[in-house]
Image (tube, rainbow, N blue to C red):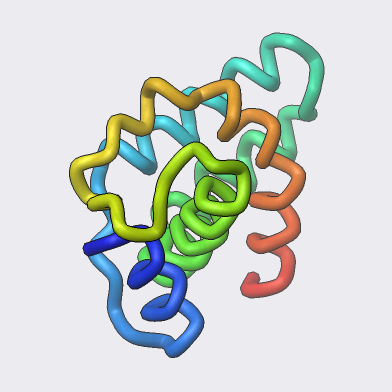
Length: 107
């Protein structure tokens, strides 16, 4: 699925297949941020719990894909399923406040 299609599908409430590499990268970024003191243990716990929920994970995935397009990290026509999420861990770390906000909104 293309990056721009992911955002539209999530917004429309259609099911989205989230690559396992994405959820692994989100957890890795959160753990790094926790070790660096950027987020607390409760925020880390909330992110881990959200990644286990398909509905919340899809919302996070859509938000991160949208931000990746806006930041120029990915084009809207690029395939999001085969994207190497591990290569942009620093970007995902910067998005942790957005991820936590999405978790709160759709909790």
